[in-house]
Length: 218
Image 1 (cartoon, helix red, strand yellow):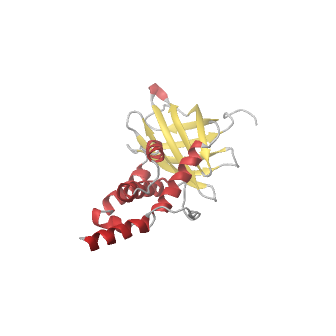
Image 2 (cartoon, helix red, strand yellow):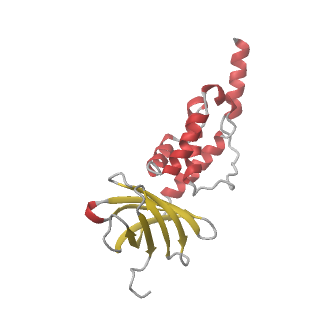
Image 3 (cartoon, rainbow, N blue to C red):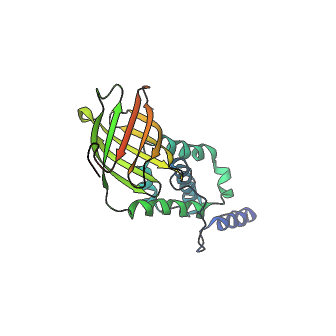
């Protein structure tokens, strides 16, 4: 029993947080799946050795991505993968904490929401193409459109991300349970993006989101 206790203490110590900076330069902080993966990992680190990210950080990130299918897949992967007998083998607790702190700090340190205009065509929802004013928070190569009001009081949230080439993807969820996703391409620097996709019923979506209202000069 004493031998087991010594081994257990040693294993916990090996996972304990240290003061050395953690290199997370190769982690895609704009990827919802990756963030979900690290949230679960950090949850388990906190549960079994107390070295996970702060509860406030975890809660804020879960709230931010709670409707993202990509986030849920990443979160569920680790939730299903780890079992009690594998927690002593955790090697990346400090990395998980650093990643989640970086995501949290990026969200909380961003500036005010910027006004954009969403030029939207949505089969089965809109009878014709319409333009909606929306507020966008963008950090790095990822952004969040929160509570955009569409037809009939329907409100939708969206997240998007893109790579260095300007290509990326987006996800939408609405208050009535509607979900949609697709691909996008950024426009000129800082001026928005355009994209296409489908909702959960197979209806086609086409949009263009810009700083300037369609039909006005820059």
